[in-house]
Length: 216
Image (tube, rainbow, N blue to C red):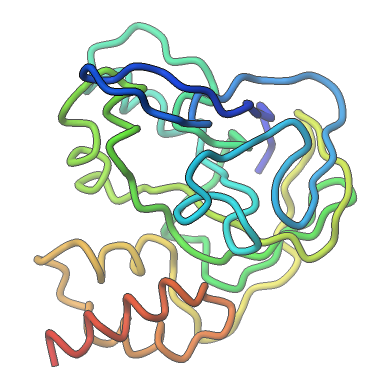
């Protein structure tokens, strides 16, 4: 896997459907080395700290491989890297093969997979489509949130190398489907594992526990 773009943005207020919205979703690629701290990347800001940023959502990665799907389904000739609000656009990142608790080395940084992403209305805003959130959920390729175990510098064209795979874990895609895909047949066993996974963010463990009670 290779980082093809590093993207950051300061938060700003934009108008959406006649209302002001504070957001940091409009990421732009940056050149050179970027420092990655425990809470976020240097030069990056999140407006909604309840749902973005912080220890468990310090770095958001999204596969460059998914861009062709979105260009086709939205009938757009081009979508610049960073469109999905990702800090890292990564070639070869696959949600079905990336597991909660996996650790990746990139540059000086050690990153640990903490949770999938839940899309919000701001994805509709940036993609200029009221169907974007639903399409994102249906696609089930959500990107990956990392916590930062070791701070350091990263840059585009660096390799993202898996250095630890957590035994008995669940994939990012299966975790997302267990919560949001009503047709997913493995929801119960996935949620049972999720409730015991220490590297899974507390927010998602609580979601898994609530969902498990409803389907038990």
